[in-house]
Image (cartoon, rainbow, N blue to C red; front, side, top):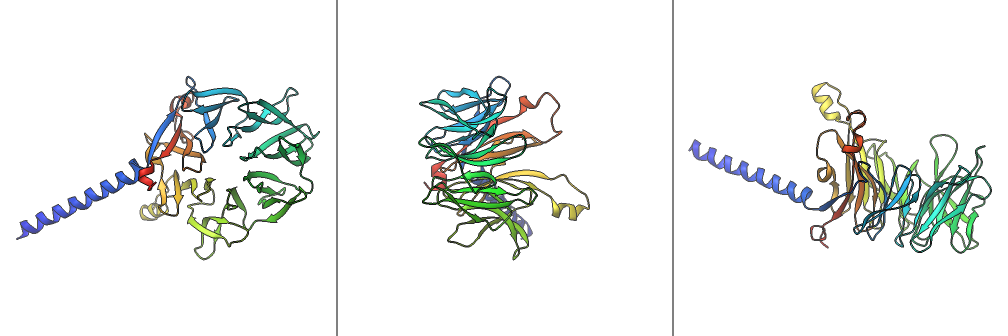
Length: 357
């Protein structure tokens, strides 16, 4: 009788283990296809932005590149690492001008490079680009003075009078998330276009905001007093704050929000329960995930990490759920001079059948 019970127990345990393995395999190994983006020799092009057609803009050693599945990376010119691409294939960023200063630019697939100007201040930088070809950014000078600008092809660069701050993101309706102030914490604000061409400012209900989508939802991070934890949340002017999911730390990097209210996150995790159990302190580790209403957290590290000491740094997310980023080594985790040999850029594309599409 004991042998029979033991046999039944072994069979049930095996079934449970098989179920866990199959569940993990379905959850992690089959939701995405992974493309490792090609290097330029030993150099990695760091992907900055992806549009809904799968075009990716990236930067490598002061040059910017456009990636398409065919022909791959194509060099377009010099630029810094704050680059944006829209669905028309236009690219906005900042480059060094002939006078040695920084200047915002637009690269158009039909018209090439256009320098946007500085409003007489000496320097400018592009901070966001929407699908209408509008660019929002900031002009400034060495003395510290600055002006917010809006650029489009019809009217060129014009100063947004009455606004002060640093633009962070802009949607197709021209709504802009920005932050202003000289001391931390900065005050986040929402700028919205008025009929007379000016911008109306609204204070946002938290200290950290990351983006705005085309449905007017703003993504932020704040302290949920009911749960007594830091949470990611979305907010729209006609709705209350909606708490989405808890964050392990206030230092979490909420990378992107798309029009389906999916959120890409890269956060630092502390092993608090393990430290309490063992009485030892452990170094925090980083993990990346996509959050959706239907699935909650979809962890991404298992798709792209090959060895211990690596972490996945997410940089952008498009409206089809495609994710770009780089696989890096933790600081001190690789010998000097070998970083280029271990770093890689990746594209994760959801498998439609696995997402019910």
